[in-house]
Image (cartoon, rainbow, N blue to C red; front, side, top):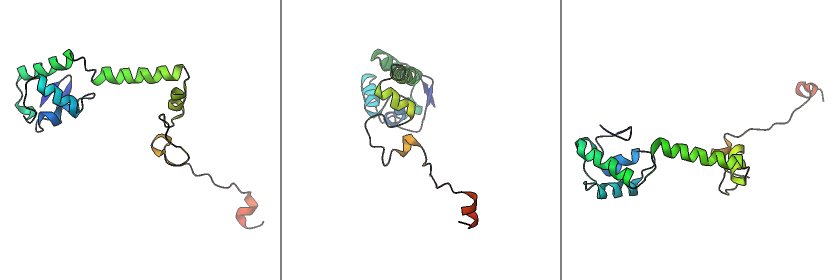
Amino acid sequence: MARILGVEIPGNKPLISALPVIYGIGRSRAKLICEQAELNPQMRAKDLTNQQINRIIQVIEENGFVVEGDLRREIQQNIKRLQSIRCYRGIRHIRGLPVRGQRTSTNARTRKGPRKTIGVVRRKEAKKGKV
C-alpha cells in the first residue's frame, strides 16, 4: 500500500479510485492529478514506484490543493468564524439545524437527531383509574 500525504492508499484499486481516499480529492481531481503526473488512471496503486508517488505529491502541492488535516482545519475555522459573528448560518450551526435553507417542520432528522416524543403528563390518580 502506497502512502501519500500521510494516508494509506488502497493498493488493489486503480489510481483513479484510490486517490479519492485522500480527504479533499475527488474523482475529477484524481483524474487531473493522473494527467498532470503522466500516470495511467487505471494503474493499480500497489504498482506505483517511489518516483511516481513523489510526482503525485508534487502535482498536489503545485496546484495548491488543500487536503487532509489542513482542509479539515480550514472548514472548522470557517464554521467557528460564522458562529462567533453570530450570523444566521452560524446560529444554525450552533443550534444543530440545517444551514442551507432546508425545511425543518418535517424531515431534517440528520441534523436534529432522533425524534423526542412528547407525551401527556397525568396526575397520579388518573393513572390508577380514579378520575
